[in-house]
Length: 329
Image (cartoon, rainbow, N blue to C red; front, side, top):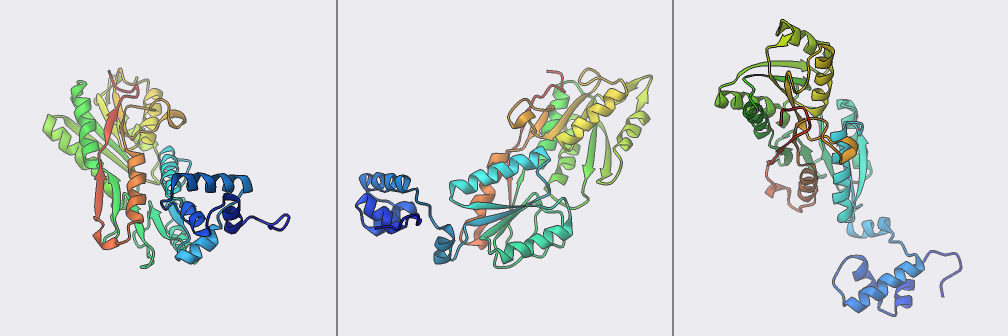
């Protein structure tokens, strides 16, 4: 008989369900058993309020069933959505997520790598900004957006195709003279291919184009200066803009409004990411949508594969265009 106020054990569940201890173990670990046995065990677990000791289970399997996620922040809607879907994908596999927000700080990223080693995580998924990040050889790692070489797989959207799709859409909507706007890290990564896709699309469709590229610490007012340099009699030379992110598109639209330029009447704007109001509402602007649920699922799937050497170095997932009110449709 179980002692009063003591936590129930697997043995208690077996007694309550009238089955062997091994049957309880199989149900808990998702192994096949007869349907009637499974139902009896699940009813006993619920009745006794039994909880699996994941720490002890992990010691036995030499696993912690914990995956670390390194990401700049959760205030950016794109990052927040990525966190949500990675966590959902891990929970489906009975893994937990250790969230590490780095604020784009390379030193902090390296410190988190050390912390994850001390906590004996089973793997790391990282969207990082440290070009010299030192990884532990015995901890599986999957990178988002930034190829890191070796046997480390990278998962990204097809950024080149996204840039080209944006230009083709602007051309289809009547644009003749377009501009590419970017602000961001100088670190090499897959998102840099958005610019190449934009340029290729312009060449294919015969569009005139310009580019304005800022680094992270440059003031956004530089974009206003750029627009004023291309302003004649109150009219902007450009009739279409492709912004490297939806955040930049949002800021750009505010700058244009300050200059009494209307979107989309005077200039059409397309962003990149697929950010939606309240997570699943309207798109904040016309945009190239990243397949965030697919990125999350692929990262987790690759990370939990047993053999790292068989994993592809780069997987690019398809993007799509979505209307968000800043183009003439």
